[in-house]
Length: 543
Image (cartoon, rainbow, N blue to C red; front, top):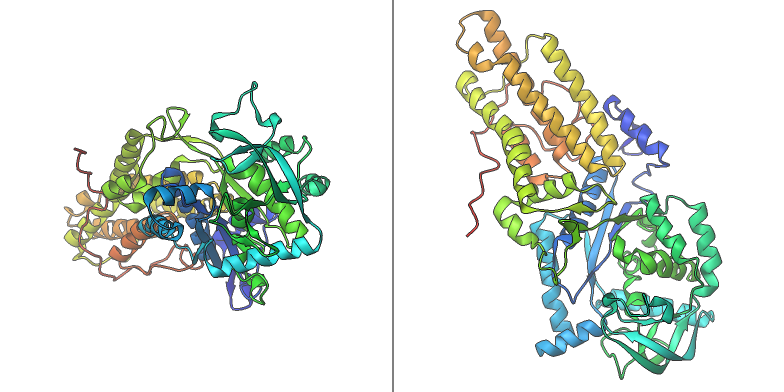
């Protein structure tokens, strides 16, 4: 469905996509009621941007751009998680105050968003007053309700993960490497009554099968919940950690970083104000599989439930980028710096590769060789070559003006039919988070346009002096232009700059919504095209 004011308007090319969306329980919401709200995990200030960060941002951006083009108003949030012991220690090592350290880190992650053309509407930092206010408000509310209590704790602590551990966390009698150095401590702290909500959470997950996408990820949560939960320690004494949000009911403690960070998704959209309902609940919360259990699938839902706040509609859990079957990590030396690839190939080529290679929810392998193959084959040979030859022939044979299609044979009928099928299929796959299949369908169509050009051979028709061949020549170029226009519109959520560049070179408008832009027509007839341009130049070899 697409919206024109308060009226619901439908057009035929999108009927299949709408049916598929509704079959999955999708509901189109009128703009005046609520925005489509997408949140991402906020990046931790102690790290540096890497391929995983880039993928999560691009995936989220593609979803939001697609929703906007589907006629839905959207609000897109990402941000930075700034508190905690590791940040405090890193700042100390750098000889700066924690806030100065976080300012520098925030700029790195913001630069990544700008570099990748991420269209987030807001960027929240957990050191901002708007966030601190809401965290303290919720803490006080839960404390007043008796959901938070003080108790003595004696046990094990992982500084690397900033969490308390139990004997059951050991594997074969040893602490897993992920926890780093584990020390035994004894101290007074405040605890949130997490375990009291375990039966509710189990029932909620069973009765809301779409809460976690893809669904097989819910099995991890179910396995985790088979063991009894412990109450969650939500404080750290200031004598050990000063860089955090102070507990409103005890000035000697700061808030545990996860309890702090998980609140950002509501603090950023005006929790406690009249504007809150314009965005909340989030439609999708995009996270990596490594932070599904327990933070986002156990702590967060229970925190919201205890505070009387509606849960997000769905957690979209993506996989990891691997290198030769192994997770990328600093220790293995196989980390990919996304900035290097964008510098060499451009942001849209990078975005295309991420969305074409990764099946959302699964792991995928990354290699520079595979990237270059996609860049050269799909983008250079198929898409870039199609545009280049079309512009060249339009200038050579028609004075740079897109001609009118004035004849139609089976080749043209097949191309038009394929265009309609492709538009409906691509949008349906985009709606279903199957962006890799949607792109495959679109590039199959682009290759079909190249085949159509080979079949019609306009360069041969141009040599003929017959009127019939002249009509065929003009019809061929007109159909190539219109087909490429449709393909470019379908690329806009994934490749916003390249899609817009192609449309501009064709003399077409860059649409803000699909509605009306995916119907085959003759709007390009009589329009002057731009000069021939190489969209995907061969990259210079690395030194």
